Image (cartoon, rainbow over all chains, first blue to last red; front, side):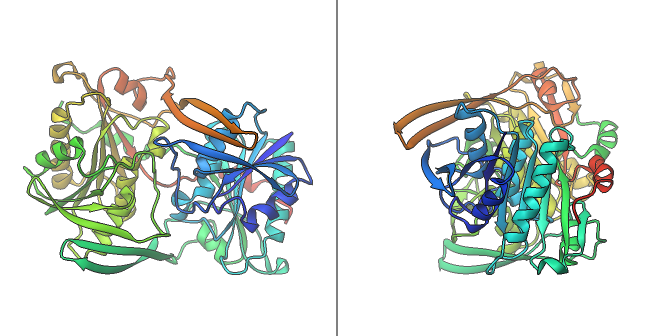
Length: 252
Length: 252
């Protein structure tokens, strides 16, 4: 029984190592992760160029550093290598939350989405800080969750869990909240430099806005020190609009 | 009244030019599109490096070639430039369909999703061929749809339209189908080359599988020569799972 471990912070990220060490206590793990940081690549896939993989040693697991995106990692591990299909995919631990609108930019979540597309149960896990993160509690929580998913298989097919852990001492964590994806967007910052009349250079950065939403939304739950667990799928159809569109004439 | 035009095939793609020429008949257009092809980048955003823009001339429109992703283009055009917010964003015309699972990999669709996040009505439009595409009918259809969206504003906030046009002579097009996103996945092909015992190189390619689904799914509608229009949103929450997850114990 093997768990595929991946992330978007790169194969040498501390969050991946912490996660892998805990998961190895409950199952065999194989690691396929980007060779360099790939944050913000979303569901990107490498079609235009070849993807190189290098075998590395990582805490005693079979591990490959992949010169590609998190989605590439899952595709290659599951379908390209000719190894048995993993029973579970766990992506993370990301340094920084993946909540609200971040969910659709996130390489961490997209790796788990790719697993769900293939019908493999999957978890994306992120810790709500980028500064000197302590992954130990989040890693243990991920292993508990993975263990219960392997035992009970309680997720419907093609649904994954997006887990976000507050970055506070364990005793201050208030519990688990089952949440929905918040509408919170980025308050973006654009640094602009006009290089010439015809050339401009921008640098993007941003901070999630703090919508006032109830605790059953991911952003709010996390900011109130709950572990947020959101069930995620990849059907982007806005079903409530179908009927009104069916009543419109579209010229033909 | 201005329409922002973008794509993922790059600013010099024929599909963008055909689209822009038709849209200019109904409104002012501004073009912000990637300087090179960015297919398959999904909702990727450039955070780690600066993004350069070069002003270019394109069929008489103000146009910028952006060294970034389609999502970068929309972010910069709407929030970075200090120009009036566009009334509508149209992304395309993509050479190749964006249906089924492709919807989540597609830079074309993601640009329109980014607009919807910002509350701007948006359309992604794709033509179902990559070989000597004739964009003229799809461009006229896009302009009709854009015109009716500008007039009637019939889309709920944060919902966009994903439009796919069959690549057959206009007289063979059977009509418009309002559709849902199909579950069709890629039958992936992995070309593998073992360079050394520790190094492997993969090349990915693939073809959408042909699920047997009714005509109210995008893949089926398009393959039966209907124009497929799918309403899309970006809430990935799998709402039907919330209740059963609420009944589970998660250790704390």
